[in-house]
Length: 361
Image (cartoon, rainbow, N blue to C red; front, side, top):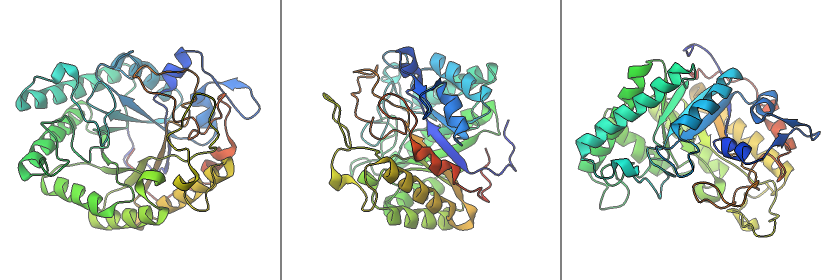
């Protein structure tokens, strides 16, 4: 398992859609057009960690436990670090959606706590049986407004109460306890979406600190068209590091390499005014964004810049509709072109210098 003294600056990729893409004929190649295994391409190009999401019982089966085991084994075979992201849902869990799995909908709060504990432990025991344990676990995904609504909901004036925060924290604590019951060395990340919002970040982590939630890594999403400027991100990272003394990972981010939209597709980011000034929607602009982002993370005070994960760099538009009912809207935010050929923006990872961060993974 993990070497707790190992120093690694995380250059990670979330490739949760990889399995579905491969199963339906999608493929990847290096810049020379030679088809290769995606994880091999990533490793050759300086990626050292992979993040996967897991859903309880998703439509189509992708990102469930069975498929997660198969992909996790491949990650381990490549010698890459592995972060597992529990959504505790049958579909997307994010600031707008934190709905319970269908099988848990009628559980009481106490039953829900036990379900979180049992499910988390069962997943990890299964991975352990296949020599595919993660090095780190997220207990929830972008849980700024809570999770497992409505029992663990804290977003909005109606739910932002001391009682609700205690219930939310109680659910998270059961998840953390389950992780530690399987392997005490697995590190715990608590992930919110407010990369450029210091006030909301402090509010969240102050609450968790006061409620005694014990975790190892702060995880933040930072998408500039939603979360502000790079300066706002830098200021937030510095303040959180000084305030809490924990390593911080920008665990979701992305930037476009084009605004070109193939016929019948509408990107989630498709307007010039959604871009950061000085960072065009081009391979060069994407490369510059990544270099500057990584520099900001490396400069976090106290050596607490843990690294980053690029969200779905390989989600190419290889099929029209995805198993969870999601349209193609991310293909210009990848690090591969529409045909799956690697972009030159991976050079940003090659220039990332070793950090002094003790990352615990």
